[in-house]
Image (cartoon, rainbow, N blue to C red; front, top):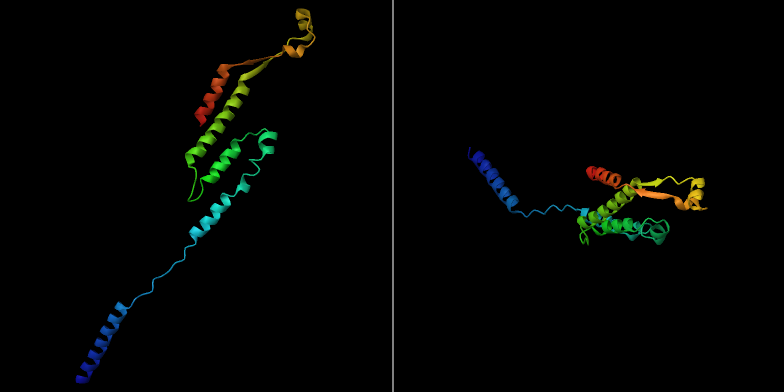
Length: 158
């Protein structure tokens, strides 16, 4: 019986010693490699590459094609708001976009509200004034009410 108690005491004591040594043993921290920041930096470099705006900011696009510089401004602004060291915020880019939209609405509504008045027939023009150029008698009228309705339509949609 004494041997059995000795074996049990030996096993219990060994278990306690093993438990204490395992509890006080320093554990190596688990290192998880996070490549997200590195990948984000690659994306930022690609999005801020000036090759993206080269076509829209070229003189042939702006001047020769009569597109204007609004697209160039907006793309450049959007490029500068990317990344940690962003130079612009979303409000500046929205202001550029809103200005471009308002200009398009204004141009469209102006064209829609402008009506060409039928020219006076050649015979009547020559009789009345003795003029020989009926093209000079074409007249254009601007209907302000149509313009207001057009702008109101876009304002409701936006």
